[in-house]
Image 1 (cartoon, rainbow, N blue to C red):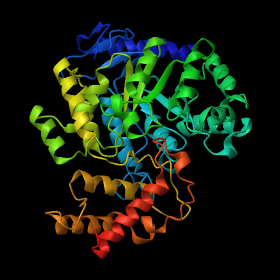
Image 2 (tube, rainbow, N blue to C red):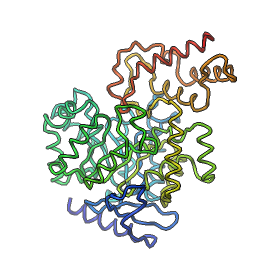
Image 3 (cartoon, rainbow, N blue to C red):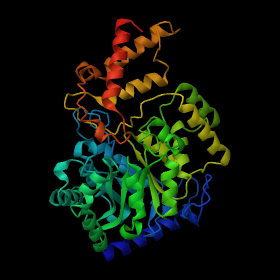
Image 4 (cartoon, helix red, strand yellow):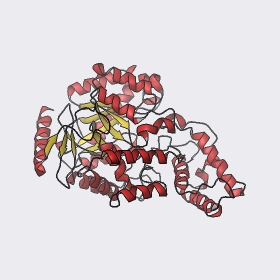
Length: 464
């Protein structure tokens, strides 16, 4: 391990020397004067922006590759079903392109891509020297059958094997907060697994230990309060320009990202960001919001606004993006090579945009698919996302008297049948509620499915 660390430091020095980079200790304050002084390596045009891990000195690419939505051989995300087989050749090409353009942080989990993400990630990255990349994975012991010490340790060792590594750079307790404090203690405390992971960190087989958070804020506050005991190296939070001030408005179970971020600053813990695009919702915007962003920055994608927002906060170590296609990667590289921090006026512009977005009552589904599989075969994310798409496109008529009722009705019904096979539509939901406890966003899924099914029936019967 010592030899590996020396090799890594040598690589960092080489990386840092490229392009006559210089170091700075701050970025845009974004109205947070108490931000941790996280250093940033400022690149020349066309070079990736890096942030410094305050514990190890690692130079981490601001863009992190989330291996959650890897491409499948049928052209979709491997998380969407189909034959489910990951297109390894395309994954390799995307990883090659990412590394060539400065990306060195790759985030996976035993739960991603129907359990195949770690294997695909390991195949792609093992073609490179170990000190060329940082791997993040998770102890995803959601099922009660994996809560035992033996099963959790087995999951951890399987991750090392699938990833083809002898140490993990960034290890996370996965989705802490779902199920409250009792579930957290069952998954990590009573079985001694957190103590085990801390010992693995001492042994060097884990270089950084943290957790990802969704759900009960009491769990989050409790773990930060015990930072002197656990010494968290980082924490992964959901953050974007909607959730910054409006997460709780969307769902009272959620916590605004402003609070989550600032608490990490207080404890001198760096943040890793997930869901900068809210599961893609901030790249698939209502037409008038889309026009508003394009008018401001015609040459940039609407997604780039979301990535610039989170990247402009200096206590952010890296920002994860689940990229399925090469164009996603290319666009994100353009945004962070280098980062153009938001100005105060641009930051206000995005906050105003978020207020406008809140007028659209979309269902806060991030397409994470933690609710799947449904025991009755229902394609829950596809149903919710189709509803959101139609809402953004103004194809949710409230009444048959609406001016464009016929066109909107046709668009919804035809699109619904194309997006969701009939046997997987909301009409088959019996309300068993096996899905809701697994939803990081706290959606009452049966309630939403029944509401959508009733709406579809009204459209079909022309009774709106």
